[in-house]
Amino acid sequence: MSTAIGQRAAVWAPQVEHVELQVGSDRVLMPRGSGGWWESPSPLSPGTDYGYLVNGEGPFPDPRSRWQPQGVCGLSRAVDFNAFNWTDTDWTPPPMSRAVFYELHIGTFTEAGTFAAAMERLSYLHDLGVTHVEVMPVAAFHGQYGWGYDGVSLYAPHEPYGGPAGFQQFVDQCHAHGLAVVLDVVYNHLGPVGNFLSRFGPYFHNCYVTPWGPSVNLDGPDSDEVRRFFIDNALMWLRDYHCDGLRLDAVHAFIDLSAYHFLEQLTDEVDALSASLGKKFVLIAESDLNDPKVLRPREQGGYGVDAQWSDDVHHAVHAWLTGEQRGYYVDYGAIDQVAHVLHSPFYHDGRHSPYRRRRHGRSPAGLSPHRFVVCLQNHDQIGNRAGGERITLLASQARVQAGAALILLSPYVPMLFQGEEWGASTPFPYFVDFHDDPVLSQAVSEGRKNEFAAFGWPLEEILEATDVQTFAKAKLKWQEMETAEHGALREWYRSLLRLRRDILVCDPDGLNFTAVQFDAAEQWLSATSQSVTIAINLGTGSRDLPVDRSTIVTLASTPLIQREGAVVRMPPESVVVLRHMTG
Image 1 (cartoon, rainbow, N blue to C red):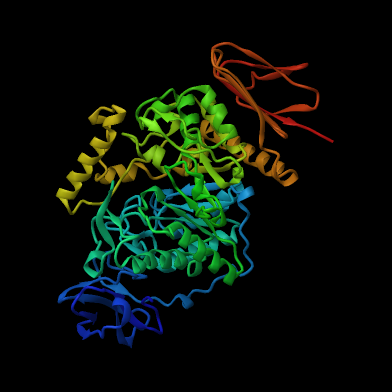
Image 2: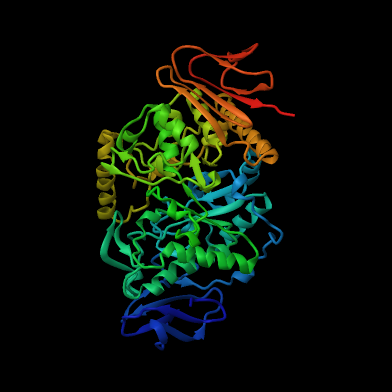
């Protein structure tokens, strides 16, 4: 049950003595219904501002508010979703087997930082070769700017981005440009400001503690309605905003010991919505567990999630290219680990992890490669650094090109992070707008310093997350893409994506690696599939790569790479992509 136009206002508050509905200056005592719900006989008209008083305190915004035009601490506003004229009736998203993801953050993707401004770049993304736009969280959070992972009004699109109507328009235009939309949602915790859920009911319990505070109540007393709150939220984004899928943040933080796990219930209900609407939705998990149970079918005891991020692929490639072994990168850096993740997305598949000081993970054998989303960069791996540095500041352009080739021509689902394709100079540090709360700002600052202790970064290198300039620095500079150096990298990415598309059109299995060879001493690696060979020479000496007459040089990181008869001569710090021509 939720607040909706044409229905009575309703709110779940099972343990309170009385609830009042405030509309304007009028307050009306709400009758207690069944199951801990309170319902008002007065319908809410579109545009009505309202709130709830709980035991005489408040008014607080509706926990299921669809619109927070005055911020997350202000009154809620009723919305008529039927007022928007959708134009995507015939839209069908591309399958995951052919997907290319592009992760973006609305607030920094453009200078204006709005849904409307982001729409102006959709043609560019389509031309680049992107099929799916993965949008970092848009649920309303405190302040004007932030990453979005501290949302508190989970049903309401952030007002500074453009609110509900703005997000509907954005999704509709993505579909008009041939782009599917996957929205990042956060169900493992809420932000510290504007989180009034505990005023209404037991949404959290102290039995388990997460890095963000008390765990969400998924298996304790009254947890049925708490689970309903989050599942109804997921269904809303898919049904009312026409999103094509959801990326579920940090599912390893879902603590649920019940027989019917929250993830299993969520996939059940999303599948039911999919069947009723005749549209396939995808759920993508972020999981630190390396547990294939997340993806295995429900009939096999799994949770049935469609896909998940694979951090091991990123970590292995990143550490090899950059030589970095701070923090969790201590587990990586060897070339044989790169060879492993090109065959299997989990490096930690039951082996010992020095960083964790224990065994970690389980083999994902039998799961299709397109169940795993991989990347060279994403918001976490850039943002969880002292200065939010991108890999272009940590490795040579040839090494970045090598990493891009491995990711974009892998059998997995590749994902780019905004601006990666042209080597954007702008960092993407963590930022949050807590300027009106000095105590909270200081807590965030100290927390970041403690978090980075394992990486050994000097304190002076850590950008202050609460400084508005940290946010301003993260905004993309689209004009730099037109310079020669940035333009060359962008063309490299476009060519790789074009090659990927052409191969998959002809052969869905054409990118499955059949052989990976390497030499740890000489630092060269070649990965071969039915359609291509990616050869990388990161050593100090030249290398001759044997080829047959049916192989052509498709892409090379330097004009010094050339074919001489049955070999391709590769200088140090270079990468080449060879196409195997058949028929």
